[in-house]
Length: 589
Image (tube, rainbow, N blue to C red; front, side):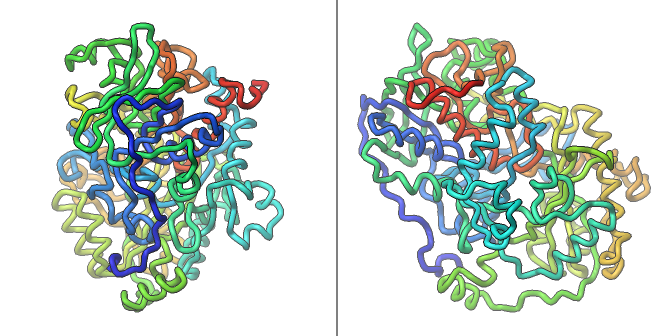
């Protein structure tokens, strides 16, 4: 059906013509969320020649159409990573491990994500500053959010408090999806209210505590990744070149620990391209540490175990992996909402004509809740997304296929006869830390991902207590009208516990824990090279001419979805480069 939609994607130019030995001022590795921003901002300096290298190609049409955001998972536009089975967690997940999709195309993971945009809160960034990164305190960081944002939602723009909060003239479009299910969303908001969550027109103004609609990186019924908003603007700049379907094999480092270029597999050949100023790695939280380690930058013992000569001993490379772990809480019942009967051909016609209809909407309500165990808290501990499917929906049955039998069978049968609401419960600030290891010295072999969810008992306690608070939602008026009931995970080792008891969730949570796709932290920013990978100016410790600019530099994960903070990191990182070369004045901090 997607193929029949008239062309809605951006027009991307072919790969640039480059050859072995070409010289640039800056080479940016990875045209994902961060890399597109960095390439845009660096090419603002006309004397600088900038090369952007992307392992994937152009975003497929499915990337642009909101309901198809999940259809690209396990496709060529996805790196198709999986976590390593450990036997300690994910016992009830197929294969004992998890898919960790990452975008492999222009726009990166921002071209396949759920398009949810949040900034994070002041305490997130002040924690970074307290760890020795003074240039990333909230006062500085929020100026960069206003620089990047272009709020488009006309209703919100009429509210002076909201209008003044956001930026209005930045490259990144910020909007709110039009809703075709207003009554459902209103009932869900009221249900959250009845369990004690305050309603907000904009959650940022409530310090991300309460319930409300998300802001979204979409406009005119179409995804707005940084490829669309930043990269498409600069394709014809004379000082810019982009190569696609090009795989960076390693970073070139001389005996004085100065990076001078990269080795790239491009059009079937290995070539070297050189950087007179810097190489910037923007591969994301999996690919960036992998490339550093393949280039001899990382923990010496680990590199030598893979027959890689250690050139710079940085033990923190690949460590400090954090993610917003997810526990899915399924609820079943019967609603009076009629299923959308508009046939697919009419949806295609409406979308092709004026970007309206079912194809202009996201697959799920962009209604989010943030709360904490402490009712007087100043910041959230938990975030909840949700899915809603009518009975006998193929989407529900496909969703439950991530679980082994008999869980999959039990939930699939319930979804056949009942409407399904799945609350995706996320722990925002986990104590547990994972790691990225090399599998082999072959750059084309996927690295080993150890998520290590719930390693820390404090995370287990928080998850169980947070879910038990959420479980009360079935006692609200709307869910009572549905005759709603919690779905029990049919898993033998946990069946002895009473449903929704502490023991039940303590038992089942490690078995079913999954991801909301927010990995960060594996090239941590900080002043101490024994643990951190980059300094507060994002320069790799002990190396000249090399920076990392992407979500991997986060010392601690933000209290929200990570795409917005990643754009901010790229904006801030680009200015740090300009400061270091005297293009703009250094900030006081």
